[in-house]
Length: 187
Image 1 (cartoon, one colour):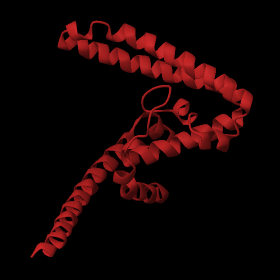
Image 2: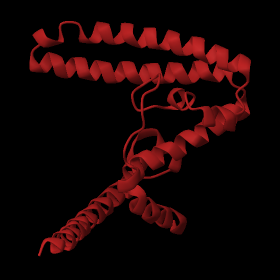
Image 3: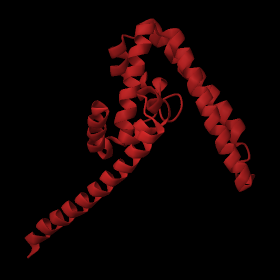
Image 4: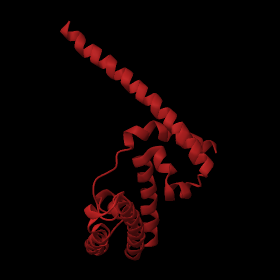
């Protein structure tokens, strides 16, 4: 419990600096292990061989095409839909993306060996925590993997919001002080 609290405080401090998501990759928009495999450093870290890389590149192209087809079906005639139909289409898209992410993970697991997959999943958890800070801990699979209860999620969320407000106040104060120092040159 103490370790969780200490980790949470460290994440709070890093939350705003690291909350920006990364770039583009294949697989679902928020990354996952497919996205991580686009990074040379990650592939080096887990020891991807040249043969595995070729298989992963072919898989990436297949997944892109699959995703394009799935989304085309979901969003056909989106402009002509009622607000309720659009909401339904968005929900369907979210489900399609979850299904696709599960498919990507299964397929990648067929290319990588178990130790590579284990390390890749560890890196994924680290990335989720860096990208989302405390918010990242509160969401879905990561919260589940960390064993965070709904009560703890609520407490963390409340504390994160309080700390975010304090941080914003400090930023405003520092910005004003910096502006005054810069403008003092003009007097």
